[in-house]
Amino acid sequence: MRLWLKDPIAVLADGAERGLVVEGRRIVELVGRGREPAMPVDAVYDAGRHVIIPGLVNTHHHMFQTLTRAHPDAINKELFPWLAALFPIWARHVKPDNLRLATRLALTELLMSGCTTVSDHQYLFPPGLESAMDIQAEEATAAGMRMTLTRGSLNMSVEDGGNAVAEATQDVDTILADCERVAGRYHDAAEGAMLQVAFAPCAPFNVTKRLMVETAKLAERHGCRLHTHLGETRDEDQYCLANFQCRPVDYLEEVGWLNDRVWLAHGIHFNDEEVGRLGRHGVGVCHCPTSNMVLASGMCRTRELEAAGVPVGLGVDGSASNDNSNLMEGVRHALMIGRLAYDATLSHTDALRWATEGSARCLGRTDIGRIAPGLQADLALFTLDELRFSGAGDPIAALVLCGAHRADRVMVAGAWRVVDGLPLHLDIAELRAQHGAAARAFLERL
Image 1 (cartoon, helix red, strand yellow):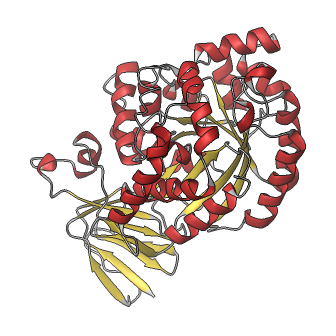
Image 2 (cartoon, rainbow, N blue to C red):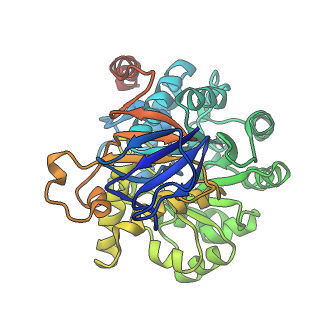
Image 3 (tube, helix red, strand yellow):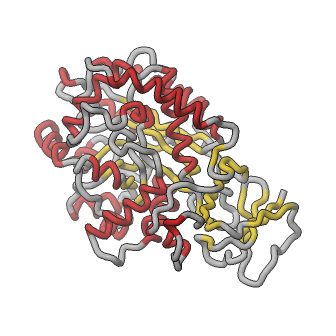
């Protein structure tokens, strides 16, 4: 079926003034000013109220953390004390049933914000949660979203010199065996894949060097990507110097991670030499502006990283260090904090590029992230009907500057997944009630 999205207010693509044509799962044509589609269409959707952008791509999250938003024990803390407050709570309370609700809620929030592809850094595997990746695969499939299932890991507790609690860790052999299982079952390297797999030891301060090295070897064998936290705080710098006698990027190279299969979360505290080295090796960085502000971690050097050749993407990060899962809001935050770091020439199109094409590059995908013929039909359609947009002159800029946060329609692989601002086939009031009830257990004091 050929569908013409006709006469939108604006499209974030050149030569699409009269919209675009979708056939099956792909975009097949951009319709320029004064033109009609080159071939007959089967249906027309009047997009006269809409601004169309590529579906947003979220490259870093921790969905289980939706269960501990604004937790009293973790408010007003920086990363290390924040983790110390929450790790015992997560290890005690995260179970398959509430992980399912947490994943469903986070996916729904992201989808409603215009996000079509997600990556979730699921590193928490206390006893009983061995099916975490299967749960997430099922929920992403039900939501109709693309997902990189990012099989995370912890194997170094406080007793071992790390900062995780022992109940949340697994041994190296168990981790690697499950990574193999998950990759074998879910990793689809084909164009247009709905599920892919990445391997993701959590951070230098809670996984061993052996796990980093063995995970890199495993990823190469399976053709999977690699992900970890790096360069998030000054505390991490000091930890690496004290325990590895080198800085975080040196450690990354030492364990075999300095290559173009890798993308990093945060990437704040890199010096000029390290920025250049990351760029030469094609390592990606996921900028998490909201989390960085909440935890007072610092400002990602987005301009320098891009200039060096680093793919820069965008992520909402864990909902307990962001307190929502809205990637469109994250685009605005990326613009605002970027202007504080640089100047007013950092533009709304820069922030949108990070959340679309840049994020797609971080995930190793060339079939999403832009509106162009041959690419997957992943689209977010926003209206400008709210009071916040009244008077806006540039409709694309208005989405970012005026604070768009909810898409009116979202298409994934050529199929509508959000209509009139609501996900299809999901009762969000019921989801809110179920998730809220599950989250109440996380407010119990240990």
